[in-house]
Length: 248
Image (tube, rainbow, N blue to C red; front, side, top):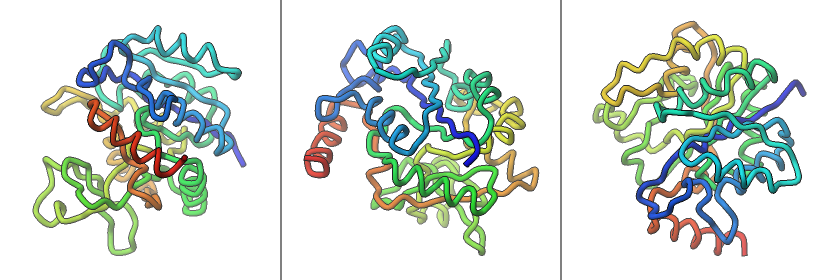
């Protein structure tokens, strides 16, 4: 099988949640969203897990300490983007090697089957990176998956950078990725923050890998729910509604 690990990004503040706790501790069906993600990772057979903390990290550390298994943490002192969050987990990546899945800690419906099947595709195609994508009814605001004639991933184009033809694409980036740890470590320090937000974006690692002639793919999740997260109480209520229908 080779070594498997997971890095879960859970540094978000969730200002609009009207809560004094990190966004990933918001609850869906009485369970923190972060726990939904951890459950999926464990069900997929991945036991080496690192959670990247940020805003009010003590709440997340306190919660993780109540669990019957060990989860590593690393602290992202300043929130400078997803690429920066992964940079804080460099030691974890170096130690574990093999393949690593990077996941958002606020997307509760990224299920274990999707994680496992995406890994199978990642390995079968000998990819350096495999993005988990989803086809959605309304792709507004999401990064689009651009494929070449053979159906391989050629780019992830952010909504604001997309031209009219790319805006028509309804396959979007879920923000979850399988990487070869070694390949990711090879480009992590090359990610630049020369954008309007001054942030380090993880999709730039994919651009860098493609530039180096590495193989990149996209695996489409079976349900658009896989990409859903919550930024405010209304969206959180919607996640709870979906969970009620799906899991009760």
